[in-house]
Amino acid sequence: MDNTCLNTPNMFQTSGPDHDFFARRCIWVNGPVIVGAGPSGLAVGSGLRGQGVPFVMLERANCIASLWQNRTYDRLKLHIPKQFCQLPSFPFPEDFPEYPTKYQFINYLESYAKHFNINPHFNETVQSAKYDETFGLWRVKTVSTSSSNPSEVEYICRWLVVATGENAEKFSPEFEGLQDFGGHVMHACDYKSGESYHGERVLVVGCGNSGMEVSLDLCNHNASPSMVVRSSVHVLPREILGRSTFELAVTMMKWLPLWMVDKILLLFAWLILGNLEKYGLTRPCLGPLQLKNTQGKTPVLDIGALEKIRSGKIKVVPGIKRFSSGKAELVNGEILQIDSVILATGYRSNVPSWLKENEFFSEDGIPKNQFPNGWKGNAGLYAVGFTKRGLSGASLDAISVAFDIAKSWKEETKQKKITVAARHRRCISHF
Image (cartoon, rainbow, N blue to C red):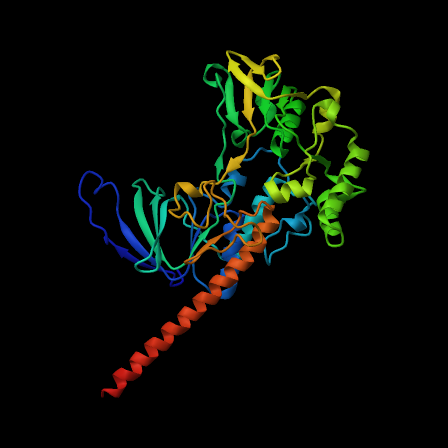
């Protein structure tokens, strides 16, 4: 384990019925513990490898990037060009398309982990992480389910990196009467393809990138989707004049103020997409980039759903008032006969459920300080993947975190060597 850990079995003695069920042990980590083996955690791991800093990476799933591998639909592709999605020090293969498929991206992440020799502890769920002020150390308690006999482990470390990200848990809002609906209900994280929805009337709740693409996929499989658009939304063309809209925005922001870039993007959107209000899609008062920066709401990049909306194959409907057997009543009084419901209602952080700390993270599990100052807390606590700026934002934070930890780790390691050498000299002087 590269001298990362010191394993001390049976440090904690217990009595009662759980004593035989859990094999308890305590592990000292000579470096940071990274919680999460998604793109954010892998990016931090590569930076630490480059600096020669040992670490332990904990992952509750049985694979890296479990969100991408287990909770995404089949047709998913990266919505922005690959050069804005690559992790530090490892570009995408040249033969990958501009917008890689989810399978290509997973392959890239697995190659990334292999290249930097990152070997997470899979099937290990963090129950709690708490800073011990007496000893100045983090105590990270986990439950491992990698074998037939679950075991509890406590990791002791100086640095803790929270890399579970903004999308750790699905968010499913409560709706009146949903329990009486009687049809099939699932979150978009469990949706794979519209193949099994052939001929069905499906209500898609949510109009972000996932809601739009799920509705499009349902159309392509001869289902009849109705998409709930409860509030205003920015829809932009994925490309403008043959160039990625995202790339164009990044280029313009180097020279122009953000409000002006927003004006230009909205002008192009109007010229290319036309007036969308007549289809039930109203734009927010804030521009797309300003809304993203202030509220974290990502604009929708259209990849074909608008054409289906114009043709009436995707029906746009307002908010839901209540469900009943086989029906959904909308806020405008309209009643829809539906067979299935797909909740494209997004994700949220799970940090508050396990991190026992309330200074650095807010109640909703996001660092209180906004990007670019949200990566470092107190007492060796760090966060990566919470920038609301996608993979590029996570990569920037990962570089900062790895460098900062490496600096502290090298200073402490050097100090320990000086202390040991001084003790050795004193021992020699006695003879």
